[in-house]
Image: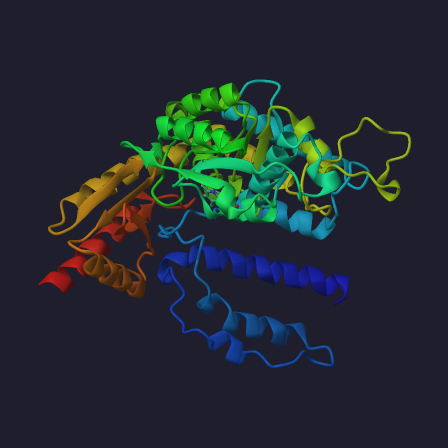
Length: 465
Ligand SMILES: *Cc1c(COP(=O)(O)O)cnc(C)c1O
């Protein structure tokens, strides 16, 4: 493609994009196709000769949009959001055009220095103290892996990377039963092992980690010859929004010499509003905190920020500087690839810069406050439907509900998602099958929420009448 065609096509794709976003409400939220539809429509092998872009784009329009679940749909209330504010999409277009590999300061001075500044803007916006620094990863899974590797190396006095894990003390990591599966995967990859990730019971009105059970587990492990290394604390669990008692758990971790990592992948965005910070009171004392601006805040996927009280521990764990990556004559610059797992990195700070300037922190707070308020309204409305009950009250903008029994709840969920007006997903709470309702789409209105509630009401009553 020649550059003048590139320009014309960029404009056409911009028009398509506007129409797509403006027309989302008319589409079913969840893809309605069958497994194998797209695979069958794609030729078995790549073409030998170039094809016309007109044909390629026509095929895109024919095959792709209807076979996608629309994450930017204003009635996407499943999982957690993956919000992409329009200004952050524009930042991505520019980052894609410059297409830099931002591994070192030298390969990307603007990306590196903007990353430093954007992480600090967020630190201030979230009420975290000066001195905390951080970096941007692709996803929370990677940030949590970085934290678990740091826990491991710190506990082994940095011998793991050098000597391997064979013959080292057996480490223990603690998290609650409400911890995300990315913690399990990090324990596998870090060579700590599933059996050494201790899932402490969660309890109480917020499903937070039981402190006495944590103390007991640590004492038992020490007596059995294990070496406790780290604690992962949950602020806003993925299942039902569990909230661990952060300050209390950090106090225990300090007494026990454990490295702490707070997983606030979803809920972290809400901390730009002072009134929600009680949910993670004490987080400023953590060694590491992860939150995903690509979830609720509006920075296009992927964008996961990790705050670090002491980056040196993580850099000592992950930082390598072979000869071919030396920046000659500048030993004091920051190379964020030494803070993270992959060497290669995208220019992710640009979309944060556009996002925070394009809406202002007030514009971003307004959205989150609305979502939290509408979740209360929606939970109330659903509680008035005969035969449905709220199982977990809203934690920020997430609540769950259920019908009389698991089979009825599951059947209701199926009808809701086949209907298409909204999209909800399931989890289990204390063994019970429940439907999650999470309000977070960037462009959602109160009317969208009530449309979804109406769909739940109608689809439940058709089944029971
Ligand atoms: C979404 C989520 C994750 C995983 O995030 P990725 O960025 O997809 O890796 C981890 N923890 C919690 C609490 C989450 O909600």
